[in-house]
Amino acid sequence: MHIYMLSLFPKMFEGPFNESIVKRAVDRGLVQIDIYNIRDYAQDKHKVVDDYPYGGGAGMVMKPEPLFDAVEAVKKNIASQVNKEGSLSGGEAQDSTSVILLTPQGRLFQQKMAGELAQKPNLILVCGHYEGVDERVREHLVTDEISIGDYVLTGGELAAMVVVDAVVRLLPGALGSSASAEDGSHVMGLLQYPQYTRPPSFRGWEVPATLLSGNHDAIARWRRKQSILRTLKRRPDLLMQAPLTDEERQFVEEEKGAV
Image (tube, rainbow, N blue to C red; front, side):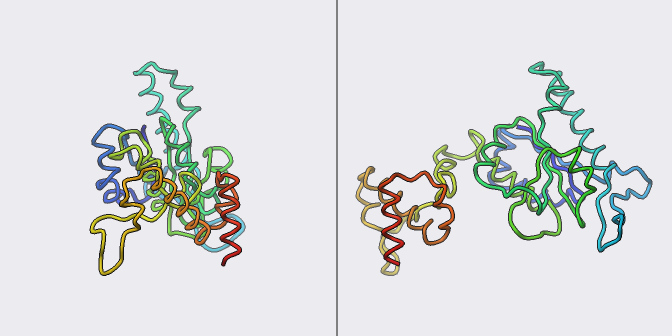
């Protein structure tokens, strides 16, 4: 996988992408991350990338020219690389590349979306700033818009880091165990069950006996039940779409009545 980050503040990525799982995935050749400075594509000597909004209003708007030029430069890079490999034509590679704008107006980022993006060979992430981008960027350049939550950040860089982290950990070989990627919160539409480790007794608080039993079927049943209970208490909205059996849905209704 190849991820291209387009940002006004490229140094923000130096720490997060040089540590932990993302760094290991890069070192193993599972992903390559290139960072482009949008200012390098500004068309004037002062490297201006924003301007006042037509019609008035507070703040500034990112200009279309630098963003179009930056994305087109990345796509040429992708086409050149694909032509060398010969897997498909450069034009096909450019057309199939996802160009994602990080913005509060985008689709809410979820685990399913992370899984879909992890299947892409190339991703271009555009970090928005100021009051947003010129609407022509939305209409004619990006293929999708993503938001990581219903709040406003100073820019799209932090949101892009979240997306990259969620996507890279799903790449085969990125984690020590494939079960780690398959077993976390939201993967099966539920929050993760409680986790315990040594010691079995700490300050009088005991690890549930089932987890110490060695009975893998009983442990799996306990974890599934605890995932459902935790989701019911903390994120009941998720249960509407969760893949529950009829017996589990009856269990949820009984728990609701017991509250």
